[in-house]
Amino acid sequence: MKIFVNRKIKWLFGGTLMCVLFFTLIAVLLMVFEVRNAAAYTIACFLLMSAAILALLFGYFREQHKIMENAISQITEYISGNKDITIECNDEGELYRLFHEVNSLVAILNAHAENEKSAKKFLRNTISDISHQLKTPLAALNIYIGLIQDEAEGLPMIQEFSRLSEQELDRIEVLVQNLLKITKLDAGMIVLEKTLENVSEIAESVKKHFLFRADQEGKEICLSGSGETIFLCDRNWMIEAISNLVKNALDHTGEGDCISVEWCISASILQITIKDNGSGIYLEDLHHIFKRFYRSRYSKDTQGIGLGLPLTKAIVEAHNGTIEVDSVLGRGTSFTMNFLI
Image (cartoon, rainbow, N blue to C red):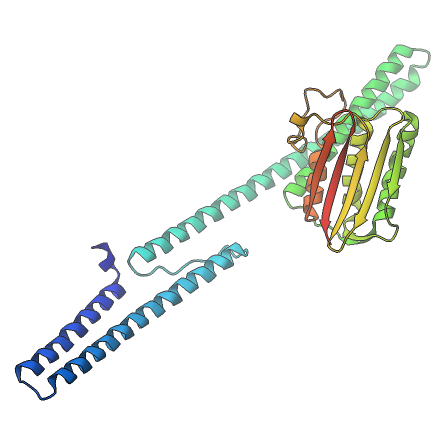
């Protein structure tokens, strides 16, 4: 039987059998030789046999408990981040087969983690190389377009084409920068430099950045929240996250609409909400808007590239936060970022 492959189980059964046979033999001898008070001696032998068997069982299960505790501590250590753990399995039996399989699983997971790390590093280096290679021609093209515009005075068609070309180059540059940012966040290249920041000042910086565009388009950006709210965050990345949401709101609102940036703090949570009263999001798109390069079939935005919201989500999660969206078609959209204090 497979159960007897383990030597400790063999010893347990062997010891139990020896106890039974030994004390049974004594009881038989007591009866054969008609020893005085044989019944009392037989009971005493039974009690001694029971105590011996219980001692054997206690010793066996105590050792099994130590083995299991050691295995659990090793698994817990692996979950905590130590990838070099192994469970001792230098014996035979079903339990040690289980330990061997756990060790094999750990080795496979480590190999997968290493492969994923290598793949991320390759992707990071590839995108970084491509992005850096693109920067030089993009800068050159911007210079050439500027020269063409200077030379095309009095030629409105050429000037218009130059202006459109400049816009497309700006889109390419934004795409390259966003790809770089997302890739760096994914690869864990960026270490957030967290400092205590005033949320009101961060919101004011975002508003100033978009104030000219909002005035040009006849829209309003409103800020609402305590001027004393302090948050431990990376200022530049938090401005990036809020800016993406404000830009998204500006892209989907019309003249006379309002974009509001609100923040409030409770005992354990800071909430930053960006709301607008624009066109809203279709219900079928709500579950997909944080996917990279996702574009709704109803979208009228021809300039968007589908990286702003995924980048915002990555930044929020890097701050151990969550982001939620609530939208009513034709009435507006609300993005809420939640951060534990």
